[in-house]
Image 1 (tube, rainbow, N blue to C red):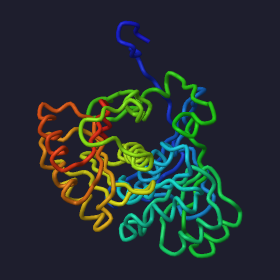
Image 2: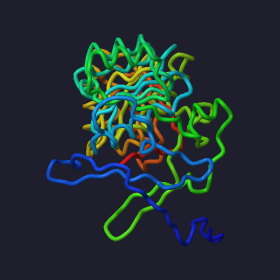
Image 3: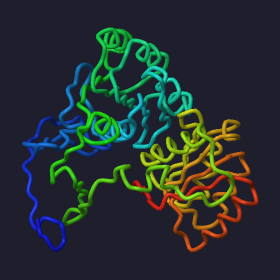
Length: 340
């Protein structure tokens, strides 16, 4: 580790081919899965080391979506389910138990959830399995499955992929159990680019601004306890949404998601459209600041009662003024969670 930069001057890893996939992202592309030959103590074996309990071979796209789903579900200490399509959540929710969380996540966008990847942060129960069989899932990933749940799922679909995967050694669930130690290697993620690799520390929801106690109230009245809980949920959940991300939430569940748009106005419109009449009275989170008031105004006009966003735009005053005019509570976090 170079002391002056905090980055190692040389990074090396050995990868072993564990599977040849039917094809890659598209049928004309070849695909394979490689596993890290060794993992340092405190690092995350991850989706590549998941145990396939049942189903036909995983595809390239299955692995990509399963990794995104697992990432989303483990941001929460409460029972949480994320339903992912094309690396974006079409529903994410927490609940009193895992079946309740799944029902709430599915209700966000059941049309898009069909054929998705479902991730749970606790064991899949028979009640959750029965709910899954009312629709269709390509993959279900969890730290464990009750035997009755496996029987229910495999009886309905002989090809459904069931993956048992250990939780990561960090995140909300790990923190609740006091197991947050990480290796140096686990602090970095890499993304290949032509001719090299980009490296960065992981984006985890553990910054001072991620705690609602550190948020700055910029407009409106302070949120009551239920609204603040929904804002905290929305803030964590929007980290799993591709930027530009706008997520509407109510009752510990997403009710509308706008993702992957090239401007925040379109993301706001998409989130409101997907929420429909559920937008009124909901809260919203934006993964980055509103560069102009227009995106915020779309949320306010739809009846969103409180919004949390990082702040930091040169036009923050215009957004704050729009919130004051609409009577909408507005919090700034001071931290951003882009997900490209």
